Figure 1 (cartoon, rainbow, N blue to C red):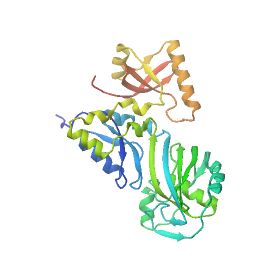
Figure 2 (figure 1 turned 30 degrees about the horizontal axis):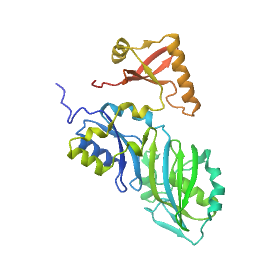
Figure 3 (figure 1 turned 120 degrees about the horizontal axis):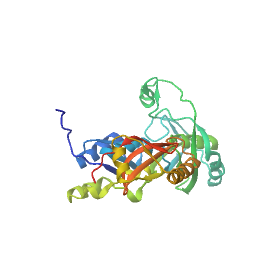
Figure 4 (figure 1 turned 90 degrees about the vertical axis):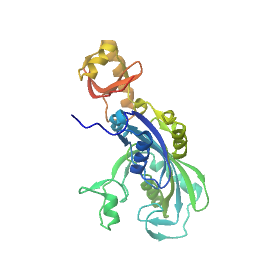
Length: 319
């Protein structure tokens, strides 16, 4: 007999408002303990320096994590001028300081350079692997290396306010793989000054935003009132930009057995139109993916090929 898994069969998402100083792995452990869940994972690491939205998946929701990794993100961040550190934030060793400060007009003038598809070199203190090791581990060991530039998409970058002569606050709407610290570094280079990220808060990841979020205090309060499930979001919350496919009870039963289902001409046309709209938004991964549901409850994720829906991930949710 197989060993019974520890914990409860809890499935769904928690839109966790991660506090400053808490690591992503620690955040997952906190949520997993809070719900006594058998399985948990997160979509998109958020540095301890940063606060804000960290979507955490429980149970069957972990099967939808890969589909959230491509989601757009929104960050609010502050750049402190006149300072350069090894990590391009306030956590790293100070390498250089000076009294040069950009004006508001100068900052606004350079912003269009950073909007659109741009080439960006990730910071050395990042989770990218170099010869099998994390870049931030190598950087901390003092190993010298260079990370290749890569294309990233910035939908919008605005100057929200001049906090003071020394700091400015920005709002960034970007695609996957964009590093805020690299944006800050490159803006400073373009302005001919020094600059590092002093405050960083993630306000949105795909369909997860601050309105849906719950922080440590709120979650602890809900737990004490035996109401933690009030903060648990549906599994399909992570699939807000992936088209849905309604299925019948018979079709749902076939999908749960791993069998494909043939769609009528009209259903195929409707699904193809939805996939085309998603493709026009610039999302290249999972380009043929739909999520099948029976009366709103997700049954499976799969791909549409020549009028046939092939399940690739089956979700086992209780009604």
